[in-house]
Every structure is written in C-alpha cells, then in structure tokens.
Image (cartoon, rainbow, N blue to C red; front, side, top):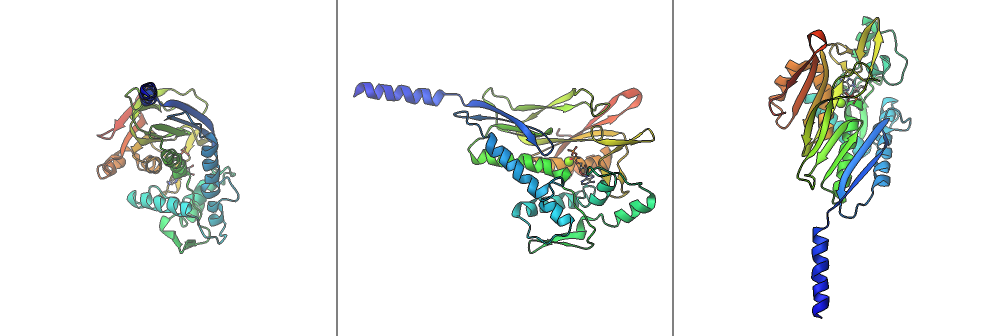
Length: 323
Ligand code: ADP
Ligand code: MG
C-alpha cells in the first residue's frame, strides 16, 4: 500500500512539472501564408481544424470566392447573411465611424476599377472617379433583418482591410476554446500574440523595413513584444501599380477616390484584437501621420508605429506615445 502511495506521489510530481509542448503549424490561407505557434500540454496538432476555419471564412468574406456572402451582397443576390458576416459588417461600420470614413469598406467600386480585385485597371479620369465616388459611403448600405439593404445597387463592399485581422482573431478564439492560452498567430504578417511563454518572455514579432519592391528581401526595422495584442502593418510598398514612373498604392483615400499619396510608407498598429489593428492600419495609411496621431489620443489601447520616407533615402520613424 505504502509503495502504491509513493508511486502515485511520484507520478503526480512528474505530471505537474511536465512542460507544455511547443507546436508550430504553417499553411496557406487567404491568398497568403499563415503561421501558428502555441503551447499545448500534449503537443496536440490542430492544423486540420485551423485549415477548416480559414477555408470556411472564404465563403463569408473573400472576394476571390465566387460563392462567398460578400460576392452575393455585391451582386445583389438576396440572402440572409450569416452571424459572422453581420459581425464583420458591424465591426467595419464601427471603424468607419471612428475614423470618419478614412476606413470605408464601400470603396469596392474604386478598388476594382483601379485593378486591385485582380481586375483590369480602367482608365481613371476625374469624371469616372467622381462617378464611382458617388457609391462610396459606408452609410449607403445597412443590414436590416439579416439582409443587405443598399441605397444604390452598384454599391460594392470590400472587407480586405479587416478580413485578415478578423481571421487571425478567429483562429485565436478557436485555440482559446481548446484551453490554449499561449499562442502566436500570423496570417500574411497580421499577428496576434497571447500569453507569456514558458521562458518568461512574451512573443516577439518584427516590423519590416519598407522594401524597394514587392520582391525585395525582407529586413526587420524593429522588434515588438506581443504579450496580449495584435500587430498589423499596412504598407504602400508591397501591393501597388506603376504608371508614368509613379507608384500607386492599393489603399484608396475615400475623400479623393484616388490611391493615397504621401511620404508614409507603412503603419503598424498594435491593439488588443487583430481585426481592429488591421482596420486602423488602413485608416492611418489614409490619414497620414499627423491626423492619425491626433486620432490616437482618443483611442486608448491603440498604438501605432509609422515609417515615412525622409531626405536622401532615409526613413523617418514616428510613434504614438505608448508604442
Ligand atoms: P493588406 O491587404 O496588404 O494587408 P490592408 O489591410 O491595408 O492591406 O488592406 C488594403 C485593402 O483594403 C485594399 O487592397 C482594398 O481592397 C481595401 N481598401 C483600400 N482602401 C481602403 C479604405 N480606405 N478603407 C477600407 N478598405 C480599403
Ligand atoms: Mg488593414
């Protein structure tokens, strides 16, 4: 009896001191790569579940998936929208309101006409831009009894500036539902880190130095600790088109109807949730450094790191106070 008791104590002690196992998963999602790292007591691999969450997400918010809900809305197919679609919609509205339309998910017609929906770029005259701008206003579409109601049937929505962050949060929620509290998720660089690692450190992610072209080697400008937050970067340097020797960003200023043009090269936003960081990063890209810093004063918990181009090929760094 004494022996059994001793064995039991010994087993209990071993079980208590056993370190959680590190799991690292990678794959393709939303047209890019994802990486998920976490600690699990037995090192259980959740790749199949994560792939299926990200795969199903395409049917809600992806413009590339012909059968997605977002395409149904854009093509005026009358459907009852899923709770997830409605949740993304409401979150997008909230950021459009806070940023006074700098983030506006009804930029669709313009993004498409500028060729960023894998579409052919139209000749964008002032008249044409003015015509498309008539359709850009997040108040022009609402959800009533689960259905989209538009002021004008040509209104088209684009969740690309919030979708990746939202998908990151979805994976985070899934891991939490499995009792995993220490994880780092990145989809195409949009990151969410939770928990302190067994070595006592938070997760560390790099902010990239703006590159010359989309093929340039990636270098790290600075490293950010993510204990309990998302970090998302919007940049003008990876997705753009060139015309007459000038470079045009895929971020559209909803007041001018044109791609943003200023010395700001990238904005990285840290916030509790990746979806918010994602949407704010795009809004700040539109607003520029000064207006964004002004707005950030009234946004507790949101911090931003700006990289602008300075004289003689230098970079100018600006940060919000708490970054
Ligand atoms: P990335 O896709 O590189 O992560 P962003 O998160 O900044 O970049 O999203 C940019 C995308 O968001 C554009 O390709 C376009 O589809 C859409 N978009 C462009 N301008 C705006 C805007 N002012 N508000 C909301 N969405 C926008
Ligand atoms: Mg974004």
